[in-house]
Image (cartoon, rainbow, N blue to C red; front, side, top):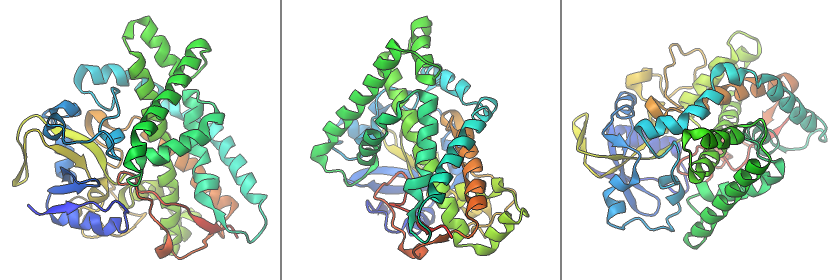
Length: 402
């Protein structure tokens, strides 16, 4: 099996995803930093593995980890070993840790957040409208970032004063270019910041999910301080990064497909279609780290060996022709059916999927209603990917509002 090295600079994600698909449903890959693992790259096999009890989240199953081959200053260590939370456990422990979060993020409960999301969106658009006409605007920084960060922070009870520091630390957390000597301190700083937030909520509880997690631990649900801190960090990280990329990628897709943009702006195609096709075609999450095989697992005509690590390559899955047909490589908002798994599948499916869809479903139509003549300020080919192997993320999105 030929090993495919994932580009730490993410210069050509589409080309990389195509090579992964061509390698078969199970590809042997090398993560930045020279760490070996396998990737599932086809839709059907991914669904199978994501519900296979032989594939677990316990890092102690990983042979390379047991042998001391994974350095603690590896830039992706925070994603491979983020501490105990619902992300890193399975079975009963996973259900115990996930229950409160899942209950807070049901479709019905998320819908109650709509009015607040609409108000935040309007405020952001008002700020954009007040800018001098003709000025280039970074739509990511000025619109796509503030909305999900404010929404998830309000949900979790995180003060907006912490946003700049969180942004700084998460930039380092996700980047493959963080110098190894800075990784341990970055991880310590993130832990300290979230511990401080939890301690503050313990002293002054509010109507937020962090306070609910603390109350549950005191009422006998046995959440440890480590589990609360790590769960908070997980939800904040996943709760804004994915939605930022979803909004940004949808705008880029619409701006580079003007006939389809016209269809949705004329009301011929619902915005829901734009969101689902963006999730499939240009998924916010390119690769998800990391699961481990407790025994040999057959994947097609190949085998994921016992003790090896597995990543899920969502960028490859979304354009799998076996699932989405011969036009899988095309952006098509009229595609039906559109059964992707951009938010995962199985027990660890993203609990915040409904919230992300709601935010994009409010933000995108409001943006184009206010600025129907919006245009990219640079050719799409000049937009730059950030060096983040897990997130399909741009440095910025320069536009002219019109």
